[in-house]
Amino acid sequence: LDEPESLRALRAAIQTRMPKAGMPDIFLEVMARTGFAKSFSHLSERQATVEHFETSLCAVLVGGACNIGLEPVVRPEFAALRRDRLSWVSQNFIRPETIAAANAAIVAAHSRLDIVQHWGAGEVASADGMRFVAPSSAIHAGPNPKYYGQERGVTWYNMISDQFSGLGGAVIPGTLRDSLVVLALLLEQETELEPLEIMTDTAAYSDAIFGLFWLLGYRFSPRLADIGGAKLWRIDRQATYGQFDALAWGRINIALIRENWPDLIRLAGSLKLGHLKAAGVMRMLQVKDRPTTLAKALSELGRIIKTLHILRYIDDRPFRRRILFQLNRQELRHKLGRRVHHGDRGEIRSPLRQGQGEQLGVLGLALNAIVHWNAVYMQEAVRQLGDAGTPALPADIARLSPISWRHINFLGRYDFSVPDAVANGGLRPLRQPNSEWDF
Image 1 (cartoon, rainbow, N blue to C red):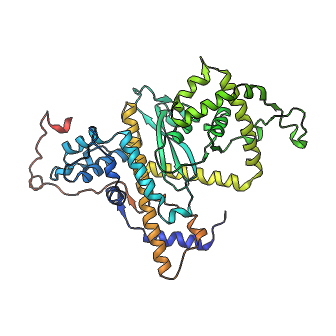
Image 2: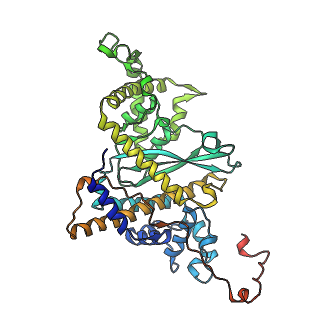
Image 3: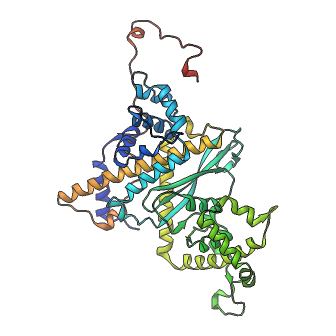
């Protein structure tokens, strides 16, 4: 789409007004605005009562999100930033359920901003994977030369709404197909947003997933590669579709769907009510790598929905643009994620799936904090421009993006000084062999 001069001027005006900040500044400010620190409870499920807990929590979150560990944020002269305090916070407060609760608090506050209403109502979301090299000793790490070269890796599969807020993520092996992961993220996300349409790329598509989403009341809208060679299906064998007769040569087995309809409804109900997890669906749909009768019926149903989607995708240009626009938001979020997660060459060092999930969960929390912080100041910049007599057009505001980082410092501040004793020719004290630093 062409960009009007008013949009370019608005972007430039906002960018020049965005204050400069570092990751600790953003975490502490968003923490104060949303109160997400209260979501981090102790393993005993009690709230922390130590003094300056928010500062300690912020340091741990920065170390995890930036993949730099605790060492760069330790300050022995401050009690809240001592190594023992940060280790205690990391071990007792950072876990998947507290991260999810904190994300939900940020997403709720973000959706209430006036400027966010120009970007979407929260009814559309997209899902895609972000690849990370992982230790070869990680059991669930998989090979994939395209992404990992000669090494092994994992995928952080995450979901973002049309309001630019992340709705959750999961760590999966580097070679696993994404279809059921999309469904799991959608059904198990804990924010107040309830997306009804999910957009993905081709890797997350299968006939069965079209059927499952339709049964659950969602619209599955993937961007399909090589759509010109896609197979179209018909229900009525005797019907005449004109020029489509040569294309719609697949035949839907309606009898199979009808015979298994009660089981299909029970499957959808079990997933919707949480009695069955999406990860357990595969056990019901195939036995020893062979599809069950229920899986075949689900695929037949999905082919009907897939055919309708393909026809609309080809015929409806604004629909194609909406899908591309949402997927571009996801790609931009992943670019920001690479900038944040810069330590250790951006690689995951933990060999355990739980440790990887916690670290990448903290990364998702950091991305949501940045997006919300940017949106707050973008809204203030728009208000300031309006007070100055140059109000922004709603159509231009709708095309702004809070995923920007030119004004954010991810690399920290460096201290170019040495102790007086060293400056006078002395030596730094040697470490004790059994000091707490080694642990």
